[in-house]
Length: 121
Image (cartoon, rainbow, N blue to C red; front, side):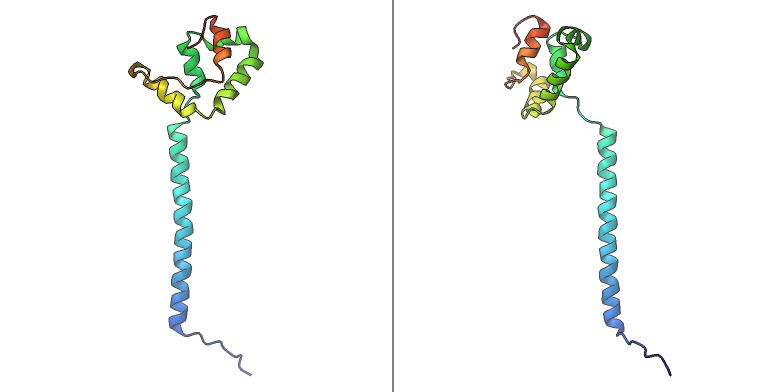
């Protein structure tokens, strides 16, 4: 007895192989794009939170702020800054301050006033 062989027309096989090949190419392209994007993010680095620039702007070092507010106060102020919705606007205002950009309403204004010992603007 001969085993029954399945006959697949070559046109259908070629089309199926092309579709599978394109699917694998698409998967590889997505993986390669993710590698490129992640490498770019790592090389570029993450932007510093505006919190540190605001400390510098108020003339207070990180050590001085920690001495005044304590580590827990410093940590909570940095967390407020990191989750603030206007962080991008704040970065822009810090970068272009000399052109008259207004600072957004800051959730850490009281913190900066307390550590600087003077009203924060």
